[in-house]
Image (cartoon, rainbow, N blue to C red; front, side):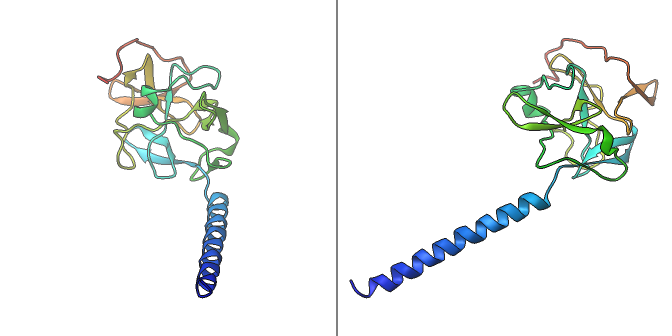
Length: 174
């Protein structure tokens, strides 16, 4: 039994060191990462993107800065969740960035008071597969640098603050 005590002490010390290092790494990681919102060029013109370069969308059904996309909707249109304070990069306006509390308690990033979402079918940066899709009760739009929706009109795109036409379709076949 006497020989086991030093081994038990070594194991306890190693476990303590591992927990300490993991805590230090986690706190260091939390402070060094933040949710970034920037601008990129696309087929729609200059659009808002997340830190991975994926298009950010607004949901026309959202009102007063609050998200109405939950459950199955949020599976296909994942909300941009804040990890720390959101940071404007690559030409995005810091003054338009904010957050809103979701029903699940997490903070969702907003831009111009629009809760922001990505789209699961945008798998590479620059894709805008979610543009003007009518799903979950309203349309989805990429955002301009000014925080307004971008619409395609007769082969061109435009940015507007006008409310979206909201159909009540079943939602992109889901």
